Length: 105
Image 1 (cartoon, rainbow, N blue to C red):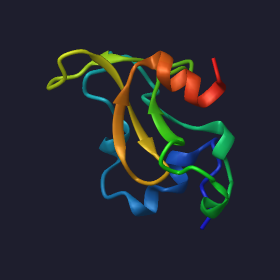
Image 2: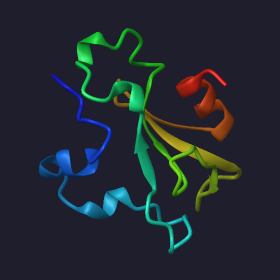
Image 3: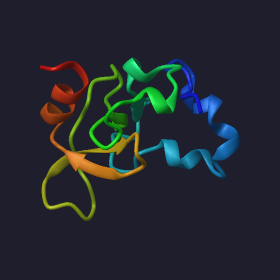
């Protein structure tokens, strides 16, 4: 019922993932070391305490500094930032839209 902590979240959920390859974006620069980031506001929180899971970003595509990034993905017609919401849905938004949801900017 608890979400992992932001730091090392990939390792913490490793037992639920069959292949670490899911943590790598094929459309990113190959030299990039970080591809996805967990929403720091959710670090260690209880799932049931998230009031609007359908609108709350859990994981998003990022650059090496951890900021949301929009990439041109293979089947997308525009640049987008892929996100996973707390309710389990996957979506795509602009990096600016993700920043607004995360930090109100």
